[in-house]
Image (cartoon, each protein chain N blue to C red):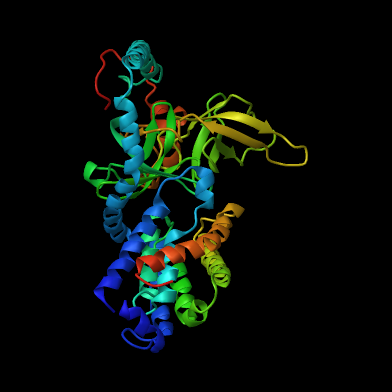
Length: 328
Length: 157
């Protein structure tokens, strides 16, 4: 190609100015972009458009593994399918029996708290989403889902699978959404130890099988096997969803803090399908949002921990509620 | 500047981008060279008028969308790398492949250091030593990668 030969000899000052000028221009542009994106979040719109443009490439890149999975599934034997079917049926029966108990327990709980009727479940609706690509290295634990703003997905939405918490959405495009996993080194979940009610924060350890609990004092009541559930603080996750199980507690006499590790309950590295969840905003177990904590002094307490919420205490009427009805 | 060479450049950048975002097992992902950075660097050295800093900036912006914590991070790092490439293009082109690979390693180190610094300033510090591994693999893969790109550009090597 002639262009290469001729370009070499000539000086570079031509269209667009000298390299130094161009470099300064683009460097300033990049710094401005970083400032706006980091401090002001002005670039959400730009990101939205860029994410839409990037989605076809991400789909194309994920197509070989997806095709392989499809091929494997379509060549599964009859026996394997029958076995799976039987397993799923028994699992469903099991779950149905458990939900029967759940209804009764929820009503009983409502009566104990003096509410006129059982609280409705905190989750409003679910949406299943497929995982398009997975970014799992020691630095970033992200998923790309095939649902976006056109499905009503919003930024900071909780993502679950059938056994526990997965993470939350960070960037939402029109047809796709990026999810940060709870094990990402940049992610932290406010949790509560189910056995004791002790609240702390679980931080991602950069490994899909580990969370760290770095803020527990050495004398904290925590032991192996304790289940961590979301505490409802922090404004993203509602209260009471399972997160992880403590696997390792290390107490050092000279360290003021215990070193605690936990393994996530969700299958973070094998999930093909996850659930996006919408929560009822006025539910006591709903995540304490910034707006909710602004309207009253006890906002965080009120929404964050149903066991300590003032509403339930003030409504603990001495007379048992005769007729079930909607909450006033 | 012929539209033909520009098309080849964008095509090679697209292929490099796909190689960069292709999901890989973890141990391979650590070793994966920054293909897009190498491609952009190749064009800024071998075709500084067509490629160069604008190409670097926009390629970096694309990387930011795929894997950056803030928009502009990879864009700045790649603008710096391409600026070095364009400034020194005559000196680099005349060197044998081994010395070119050394230079590429240095450029990748600058690139990764800029990312490292910005990660820290924006509050996403990643101090794992594994993030520096791709500098070595990138330098090692430079001679064959440059040969392939030169062949694609229709050049006699």
